[in-house]
Length: 324
Ligand code: TXA
Ligand code: MG
Image (cartoon, rainbow, N blue to C red):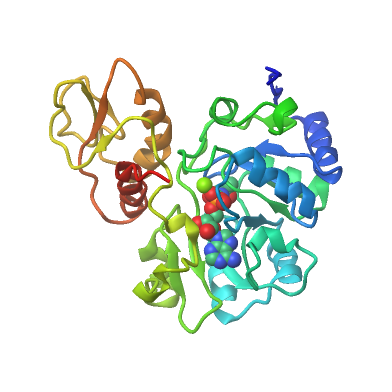
């Protein structure tokens, strides 16, 4: 294995042009979104999509999210319905992904792992927007981390988590600083009878329900063939065991606090108890604590409301440590 360092570029005009050209010629670009960093490729180029799976070392072809510039671009690719109209008006650009029937086969079938639907969103980040506009492409992008690991919320995390460009990783990484939201987008399936929450994320379930009414949960019978493999347990695993709803650390553990009740001096997701701040800190703090001298991470309780649901969802998965 060569040890080629992938260049991390300040996203000026020249870097955006270079990134767009990389996408057009089948290469991979890691880029910031408001949720987490994505590992992007041209969604219409099946070979480029396959390189994304390879770079992530994904055990199977989980379907990817297609990023588009705006609602018009989305309508070109998927078939909208009334609910999609209302949700995109309220939450796009933003951390909401919609699953809708695909229009045709222009977007590679590998993107959706053979499904007749596509997951699609318009990111609210100037660098992601600039890349979409400059390339003129729909960009398929999972989070820019090795499969099963926590998502990157800073450019440095990407280097840490993915192979270098000479070994199948991204050709360049655009540095947009730390991600504002810090957890992945909420995924809502609008392709079935009832809008269904496939993955809690950066837009709160309550806010979506205020817009379109109650969301259904995936039925238990879907377990055999999960519609959103992102819901499978093994995602987001750190190296160290994670213990939830902790009040104090046991020997060897480091405490990851939340709110004003955390002991003085503890690393704290949000000293004031702000769930948005906690989401933005979640992955980078776990990453920073994930190794010696600690032998475990004890996480204090986070309230299960609003963005707290997405945080707890990620924490529960991280705590499972199920082996593949
Ligand atoms: O915030 C985000 O969503 C980030 C940034 C980069 O946009 N992306 C991200 O992608 O988290 P990824 O690949 O790690 O997660 C995509 C999620 C998975 O849970 C996947 O199963 C689901 O979306 N998904 C994709 N296409 C789907 C489809 N056609 N039907 C159901 N679920 C789908
Ligand atoms: Mg991911």
